[in-house]
Image 1 (cartoon, rainbow, N blue to C red):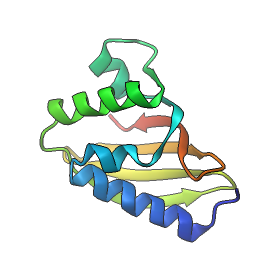
Image 2 (cartoon, one colour):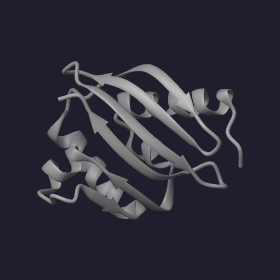
Image 3 (cartoon, rainbow, N blue to C red):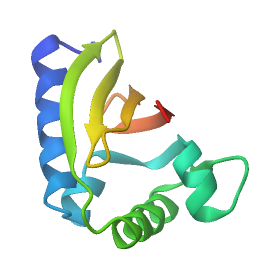
Image 4 (cartoon, rainbow, N blue to C red):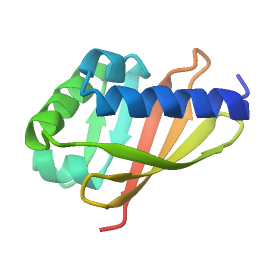
Length: 120
Protein backbone atom coordinates (compact mmCIF):
# COMPACT_ATOMS: atom_id res chain seq x y z
CA UNK A 1 0.00 0.00 0.00
CA UNK A 2 1.42 3.34 -1.01
CA UNK A 3 0.47 6.18 1.31
CA UNK A 4 -0.85 9.48 0.08
CA UNK A 5 -0.46 12.87 1.72
CA UNK A 6 -4.19 12.85 2.54
CA UNK A 7 -3.98 9.44 4.21
CA UNK A 8 -0.96 10.55 6.25
CA UNK A 9 -2.74 13.72 7.40
CA UNK A 10 -5.91 11.76 8.26
CA UNK A 11 -3.93 9.24 10.29
CA UNK A 12 -2.12 12.03 12.12
CA UNK A 13 -5.33 13.90 12.85
CA UNK A 14 -7.15 10.83 14.20
CA UNK A 15 -4.09 9.74 16.20
CA UNK A 16 -3.66 13.16 17.85
CA UNK A 17 -7.39 13.44 18.65
CA UNK A 18 -7.41 9.95 20.22
CA UNK A 19 -4.42 10.77 22.42
CA UNK A 20 -5.81 14.16 23.45
CA UNK A 21 -9.10 12.49 24.39
CA UNK A 22 -7.13 9.89 26.41
CA UNK A 23 -9.28 7.29 24.63
CA UNK A 24 -7.21 4.12 24.80
CA UNK A 25 -9.50 2.14 22.49
CA UNK A 26 -9.27 4.80 19.77
CA UNK A 27 -5.51 5.08 20.27
CA UNK A 28 -5.09 1.32 19.91
CA UNK A 29 -7.27 1.19 16.78
CA UNK A 30 -4.33 2.58 14.82
CA UNK A 31 -1.93 -0.27 15.62
CA UNK A 32 -1.26 -3.70 14.11
CA UNK A 33 -1.38 -6.82 16.30
CA UNK A 34 2.37 -7.39 15.91
CA UNK A 35 3.39 -3.75 16.39
CA UNK A 36 6.83 -2.92 17.75
CA UNK A 37 7.57 0.42 19.41
CA UNK A 38 10.99 1.69 20.47
CA UNK A 39 11.03 4.79 22.65
CA UNK A 40 13.14 6.47 25.33
CA UNK A 41 9.86 7.15 27.18
CA UNK A 42 9.11 3.41 27.19
CA UNK A 43 12.60 2.74 28.53
CA UNK A 44 11.89 5.08 31.46
CA UNK A 45 8.32 4.10 32.25
CA UNK A 46 8.95 0.36 31.88
CA UNK A 47 12.42 0.43 33.44
CA UNK A 48 13.75 -1.42 30.38
CA UNK A 49 16.83 0.14 28.75
CA UNK A 50 15.89 -1.34 25.35
CA UNK A 51 12.81 0.90 25.26
CA UNK A 52 11.12 -1.80 23.18
CA UNK A 53 7.45 -2.75 23.42
CA UNK A 54 6.34 -5.68 21.24
CA UNK A 55 2.77 -6.71 20.45
CA UNK A 56 -0.53 -4.88 20.72
CA UNK A 57 -1.38 -6.16 24.22
CA UNK A 58 1.96 -4.99 25.61
CA UNK A 59 1.61 -1.66 23.79
CA UNK A 60 -1.86 -1.15 25.27
CA UNK A 61 -0.52 -1.80 28.77
CA UNK A 62 2.36 0.65 28.17
CA UNK A 63 0.07 3.36 26.79
CA UNK A 64 -2.35 2.85 29.69
CA UNK A 65 0.54 3.31 32.12
CA UNK A 66 1.66 6.43 30.24
CA UNK A 67 -1.80 7.96 30.49
CA UNK A 68 -1.76 7.26 34.24
CA UNK A 69 1.71 8.77 34.70
CA UNK A 70 0.84 11.86 32.60
CA UNK A 71 -2.82 12.71 33.32
CA UNK A 72 -2.43 16.13 31.63
CA UNK A 73 -0.97 14.63 28.45
CA UNK A 74 -1.74 16.70 25.38
CA UNK A 75 -0.18 16.70 21.92
CA UNK A 76 -0.08 19.55 19.41
CA UNK A 77 0.68 18.43 15.87
CA UNK A 78 3.39 20.53 14.21
CA UNK A 79 3.89 18.63 10.95
CA UNK A 80 3.29 15.35 9.13
CA UNK A 81 5.84 13.89 6.74
CA UNK A 82 4.97 10.89 4.62
CA UNK A 83 6.74 8.31 2.51
CA UNK A 84 5.80 5.24 0.51
CA UNK A 85 4.73 3.24 3.56
CA UNK A 86 5.62 5.43 6.52
CA UNK A 87 4.82 8.68 8.25
CA UNK A 88 6.65 10.90 10.67
CA UNK A 89 4.49 12.78 13.14
CA UNK A 90 6.21 15.82 14.57
CA UNK A 91 4.46 17.23 17.63
CA UNK A 92 4.92 18.90 20.99
CA UNK A 93 3.49 17.76 24.29
CA UNK A 94 2.08 19.60 27.30
CA UNK A 95 5.61 20.29 28.58
CA UNK A 96 6.79 21.71 25.26
CA UNK A 97 8.96 18.69 24.48
CA UNK A 98 9.29 18.08 20.74
CA UNK A 99 8.72 14.56 19.44
CA UNK A 100 9.23 12.92 16.07
CA UNK A 101 7.65 9.49 15.67
CA UNK A 102 8.58 7.44 12.61
CA UNK A 103 5.75 5.00 11.90
CA UNK A 104 5.79 2.19 9.35
CA UNK A 105 2.34 1.41 8.00
CA UNK A 106 1.39 -2.14 7.03
CA UNK A 107 -0.73 -3.27 4.05
CA UNK A 108 -3.90 -2.94 6.17
CA UNK A 109 -3.14 0.70 6.98
CA UNK A 110 -2.16 -0.04 10.58
CA UNK A 111 0.97 1.15 12.38
CA UNK A 112 3.37 -1.80 12.51
CA UNK A 113 6.57 -0.17 13.78
CA UNK A 114 7.27 3.02 15.69
CA UNK A 115 10.56 4.68 16.52
CA UNK A 116 10.11 7.70 18.80
CA UNK A 117 12.65 10.50 19.20
CA UNK A 118 12.48 13.38 21.70
CA UNK A 119 14.04 16.81 22.04
CA UNK A 120 14.73 16.61 25.73
